[in-house]
Length: 392
Image (cartoon, rainbow, N blue to C red; front, side, top):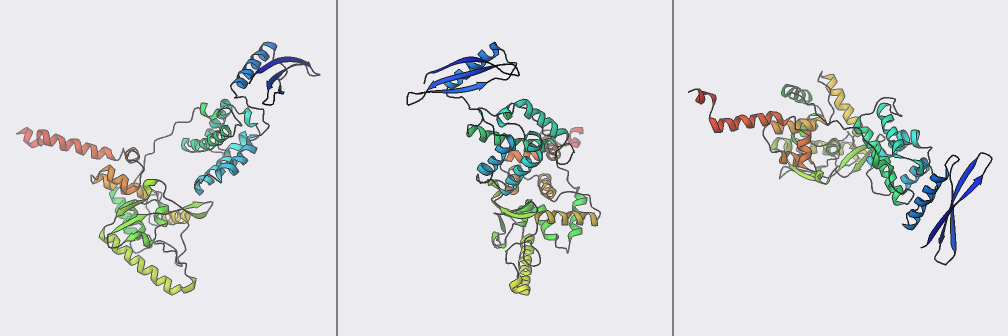
């Protein structure tokens, strides 16, 4: 397709402007014109350079017509076109909604989509890092990156929809993510925790957590049908998460999260007792009982709210004078106990449902320092004998 262009000077009340005119031949042989009026202050040489760029874009069929769509208008379309239809998990949808409403729109929303530059996005990243639009407090690097990922995805889709030529979010620098270092109880504190939950409705959940390290949602989504009492196994198949204060059932976090783990005989026996207690309540409440088959549920069979269950655990720690930790940290205790007892990281990753053994090694590298030193000592003894033998 032949493309030509020229420049026209226009005098206005505000001053001199240059207008670029692009002419191209359409399929039916007729010529079509596109116009671009440059702002006042742009000289002839700059106008000529812009014309050459436009002609090159037309020749390569990469010209992008000017659009008046704002960032806010596009993000609303993005939510309808992509977020609600792409099969994203409820928690991811909620995360995108929060990022758009509370972090992106308050700062970037009024700009035209095609006017967004890498510099503007970099300034936005720096700004929310220092002061959150939602809380006024600095944001952790991980949180900033999560908000950025939402904006980047929205701009990726804008490129796919031919609203942008390229994604300006690809040319920015993100804050360095701090490596997570889990803080866990000492052996004495773990024993104190186990003593404190004996005879309470937290006894079995805590023991199960420390034994096989389920995620909170995996524990609350566990059903009796997923337990094989004869083979002493438990299969993780569902995950209850909290979205805007409401429970939502989803698949396990990763493909590796769909797993079957071995139980010890004591836990299997306690789960059988839990099953008997469930049936007693079902008989007691009759038609008012909600037969969810959930292992850990309210008195009437309803599922626990995931956030409430964490708060219940927090109150228990405070009541018994135990150091604060998240319910999720019980999962870290599980891993550390296995590592201290020289269980293979590969086996631990399978128990925890990590997608890759590197995840296990990365999270618990500092916990394995003790095991590494013990391994060095054992090799030294193997090669050179004990210190007593050396002295003799």
